[in-house]
Each structure stands twice: as C-alpha cells, then as structure tokens.
Amino acid sequence: MRKNINAPNVLTLSRILAMPAIVLLLYFVLWYEWTWASQVATAVFVAASVTDVIDGHLARAQDSITRVGKFLDPLADKLLIVSVLVMLVRLSWAPAWVVIVILAREMSVTGMRAVAAAEGIVIAADRLGKLKTVTQSVAIGVLVWHVPFFGLDLNPLGLVLLYLALALTVLSGVNYLVNFHRGASAANESESPE
Image 1: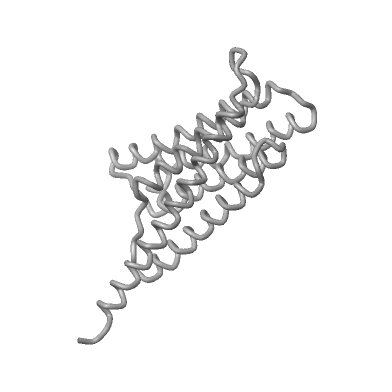
Image 2: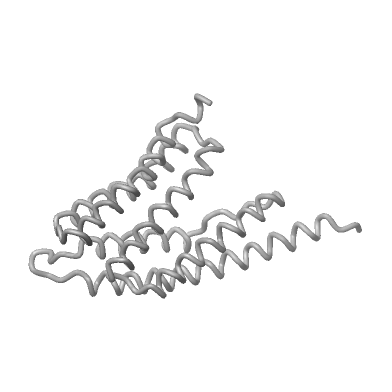
C-alpha cells in the first residue's frame, strides 16, 4: 500500500481534487457573475493540467509506476476535462454537441481499453491521443478564462481550438478503434489451433 503513496500518485490525486474547485468557481461565475472566478478557475485548471505532464515524468524517472497510478492517471484526466466541458456548456460558452461527441469518444475509448485489458491486450496512448489531450486542455483553458485579455476577446480563439480538439478527438478515437481491432484480431489468431 505504501508504494502507492508516492509523488506521482499524489500529483494525480491533486488533479482529481482540482475538479470540484474549478466547478465551484465556475458556478460562482454562473450565479454571481464574478468574473474573477473564471480567472482563478483557469489558473487552477492550468496547474492541474501541468501535473499530468509532471506525474508521468516523475513516475518514469523514479521508477515508481504503480497499478494505482495507471488507473488513476487516465481517470483524473477524464474527470478534469469532462467536468469542465460540462460546465462550459452550462455557462453557454461551448456548444453542447461538441462536448457530447468528445464525451462519447472518451467513454468509447475507455470501454475499448477495458475490454482489451481483460484480453491481455495493451492499447497504449499514441501521439495523436496525446496531441488531442493537449489541444483540449489549451482550448478549455482559453474558454474558461472568458474575460478580455489585454483588451482581446479570446473566446473565438478558444472555440477554434475546441473545434480543432474535436477533430483530433474523432481521429484519435478512430485510431484507437483500428488498434483495438488489430490487437483483437492478433490475439484471436494466436489462440486459434494450427
């Protein structure tokens, strides 16, 4: 149990704990129109997103990769991204259909990974999936800010980035599906009698 309590896993847990703080801050914007709350929410979101990069590097550098970490890391990513996307829809800062497509992809890939893992097949995150995550995070950060930045309205940029993230989300989802099918086919061939 103690080996699961390490710096990378603590950083991952901090990402999960950041989620309710961001959601609450965005509710302050919704309820009270406190614009400063969107800026604080952006700062918390950016800090939480940075921990995603740091915990992976730390885990590899310290040779402290654990099963708990392998489970919590993608879960923390999805909880953070999904919760903030839902709040963006609630605030009318992002189109609902875009968020629905992104959520459908995330759930589908999670399901494929679970089935593959049960069959002993590992579908690792590829560059396209990582690029998707980075683009989603940047788009969300820009959209959550939602106040002029030195007089510039960043919301159109945030929406363009969100649509780019949507395209990458769909492409990486198709790529996971292809890799899942290849892995399942290879597993079936290795099990079939000669």
